[in-house]
Length: 152
Length: 438
Image (cartoon, rainbow over the protein chains, first blue to last red):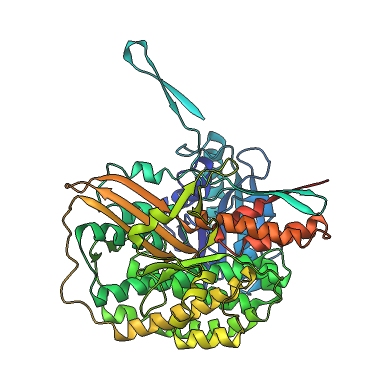
């Protein structure tokens, strides 16, 4: 069963592209163990993206006050994301809301892990800041190892 | 933010960027109460100025449908419809029956998804006592599930006919870039029929909400058509005797820039505040609703006219049922046109159009030259037209509830603001209620 890895972000807004960058890195090496999806819009119906999937990883940028490049891991089956962790859509719906809605409607996959990368700046048109770029490299390796351990 | 640029020869050019581009603005509400009197009430909408009217100048008359659609992520179809009708008026194009029906179908899709998003995710939590839809979903998963299914059915129409769910790409002057095949539309029918059943059930529940008391004696303004519930065509009418052609819009409606708000506020010349949107449409065109929607309105005991803005949520459900019923009927009788849409040639002139966005009247006016270059553009969204009426609502609401503490007053004001406009209710997430009591 393939793990679905979803990278969420905004390509045009500095470190907000972190999740998309992780997907880009993962997609370089194709593998039968994982499928990648880049999403530039968090819809209310995010759960549609993981319909019929057992194992899902989500990667997004965060603004939670930690050092830029810090990676956090949450098991969304066990705990809700801290509300303030991610950036909001124009309606105030963010990743937290989309996951909580899925939870309330019993549409979470059996396994849902969320990785966040702390961003430094979210300026229109800017590239990823160096600590975030480095964090995407390390996180992509970590995800590859998590899904398909070397030697397995 | 500002940037400086040195040109050759020592002259300094200063390029100023005073406004960051944002989709939603913050909202604030300021109240000053003196004894038992509300002395001052201002709704401050910090939306950025509509530079769209500025940068449309010099562009081709073929571009506004795509450019103006970007003004709004929830109602791009409304911008496209007002744009094409205003520009087609200049070159003398009139849609035939099939094109007319398809444009209404597209608009139905948008009304359905926009109203569903608003009713279930932005407004219902207020009535049921929840801080947000996510929390509400824990107690009422079926209600939220219904809302999602209805919204999805609306999105599917826009995606299928418009070519994309957000900012459709298939709309052009003269029609569509590609007409759908019959099967492509018929595939939508099962989910539309399912959504219609859910909408009728949900309407009954919504009609059973508790509605704060507020009776407003205000001028309701909307389009009036000789046979259909208004969308793209009609005269502009009101419950106080207004009955004008769209061509005369600027003679009757003025926009003003008030100190406390970045959005221009509209008023009717010589009169004042007015209200457009679902409540106005219902009051002015109840007799044009499809029978299924009319029956629902009657079962919900909606007064005629309905003067309580808090009942807009019920009217939105009536409009959802109307739009689903009409969409199904249009798809059932749809036949692919024999010829593709014609490319239209430019002609110098000025064109105007009003269409009924989910939130109310959306007015576009364009002046183009003989080559089709836009010389001037004016866009008046429903938000700015309703702002004055919203402020007056809040004055009346607060005046009658001075005994409430600040927390309860704030909640009542937020719920009242949401009677009008999803974009504004985003702003009310950051609503700051300043109460000054003397």
